[in-house]
Image (cartoon, rainbow, N blue to C red):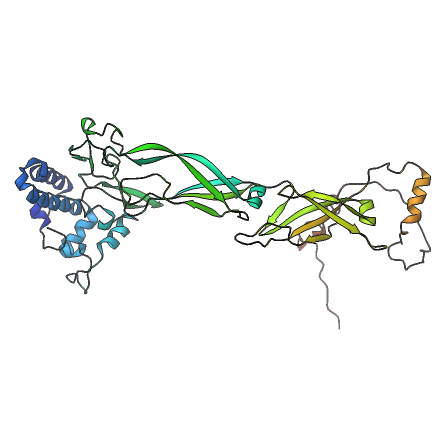
Amino acid sequence: MNAGEDLDLYSILEISQSATKSEIKKAYHKAALTSHPDKVPNEQREEAEIKFKAVSQAYEILSNDDTREMYDRHGMAAFEKGSNGFPGGAGPDINDILSQMFGAGGGFEGMHGSFGGPGMRRRGKGKPELQQYEVTLEELYKGKTTKFASTKNVICSACSGTGGKEKAKAKECDTCKGTGASTRLRSVGPGLVTQETVACNTCHGRGSFYTDKDKCKKCKGVRTVKQKKILELYIPRGSREGERIVLPGEADQDPDDDEPGDIVFELKEVPHDVFNRAGADLQADLDISLSEALTGFNRVVLTHLDGRGISLNIQQPKGKVLRPDQVLIVRGEGMPMKRSEARGDLYLTVNIQFPEDGWLGSEAEVAKVRAVLPKAQPQGAKPGETPEMVDEVQFETVDNLEDFGAGSGDPRAGAEWEDDEEGAEAQCATQ
């Protein structure tokens, strides 16, 4: 029997069309008990399996209000993909119907076999295992190869992943009646619920299980055992944050999968104390003294990611100086590019370190510095001019402009404009 035949599900369970859920359940238990393949002689087992499948199918459809209503309206045509027996032409796809009713994973194709078949089964490749792997900028610059021990689940060799002893027969799960699935309600919003089909908690979606005496001695019925293996992870030089490195087939094995999944490492770059990275370019601060900013220098300014010292020879032309936040570019000293001999650039941002207070010990030294440095010109005055009136004022030093305009409400001090409707004065336009 199959979904495409003209089945009378009520006759299969020997109940009337007005049967209650309780009556449907009782009828199913009775029919399943008498038609179970384990209860008949071997020569009748094939026929019993067909009948038991039909009984299970009838119960699955009639025990659910939505599928029962569809059956009452359209018969088994409602559950046959592409059936022309459905009003209006091609019949509905039962998998689409059930996925709407139960959410993702609903439908016959999500089950092993058909509705009422022996358990849910994931086909194809197993799920990947995603792990974050912290890596330093030095390791990304030079590349890295590391070996590590991995403990994973592998299919038990003693039972080939069945979980039972040789020639032992699994028992049907009483909780899900061999379907491997159960239906539950899930909240999708205030006052709204939907039904979804999930793997049975008792048999873990298999539809059957082995008793303790029939379980495999090696895996204790789990179907997998632990195995330790040394794996090698290679990180190419120039790799970036967020890139993924795949170790194919090294994830846990599952007897329900055709092949094991992959272990996937997602690179997470550890922040560096000296360098900032953007793509293949690097940036670092260039700390120099006031004397070096004015006169130039020739020295090692920083240690690169591979341990090399980076030296700059800056001989300033007469009168030319390095200024704060000025940027020097060193071509080809950035990060290496993957699968290439090319490299990015190194950007050095000038940071001038001024001398500590008291570095001039005498008035004579102060006079020498004044004689060398250019003289300051009053703001707003033309070169060589001096304002007619001059006030000598007292001052104090602060670290920032936090108190500038504080409490004034002026948006230029960080506040927002406010409409002063009550204090506004009316004005008359004159011609």
